[in-house]
Amino acid sequence: MVSPVDVRQQLEDSGIVAVLRGIDDDRIVPVARAVHEAGVGAIEVTASEPRVGEKIAAVDEALANTDAVVGAGTVLDAPTARTVIDAGAEFVLAPDVDPDVVRTCNRHGVLSGPGVMTPTEAVTALEAGADVLKLFPATTVGPGHVGAIQGPFGDVPVIPTGGIGPDNVAAFFEAGAFAVGIGSSLVDYDAIEADDMEQVRRTAETVVEAVADARP
Image 1: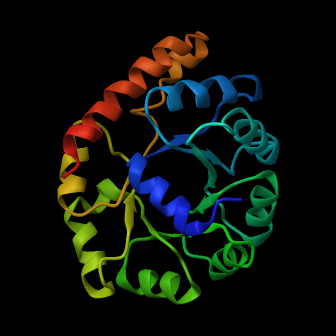
Image 2: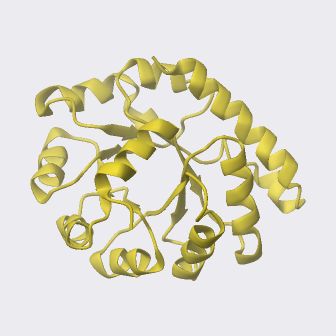
């Protein structure tokens, strides 16, 4: 298993965590491959999915010989964290702060990124041992909130997620984002429904290009 330090570096190198949500079992691997071929180095499968462990294991196997890291999102409790870790998740992200989730990740050597909105939540997450902080939902508070969270805590890595796309991604990187989580603007669900993985890749490429242009 890749160490949390190495996973953190791969998240930073990618600049994007692609959020794969609501994708059928038989399409999850082709979609993950298409998104990775577009240049995304971090793939998140949401834990709200049925059979999430099987999906993560399948994506992890499919991308095993690449530079991609595969993880889980929307992990709301410690038992779910253990399930996705056992399936091969190399990072665990959440929309909230549950210290038990963070401790489970630490126990098994997996990077954790709980979701925060306030300084109090950030302190709770960091004291539990979080590696990064997920700012969610990011567009509710805007790019300036990245620096507001980082300021008191020594420039902690913050991954804004929620409502981010080509039109606003530059503002979040200018504000100090470590990486960004992107779902609907990167994952072309109409193309997925049509089994057009080439279009899935092309749509993702436009976002990858926007992020490349936006990063300092």
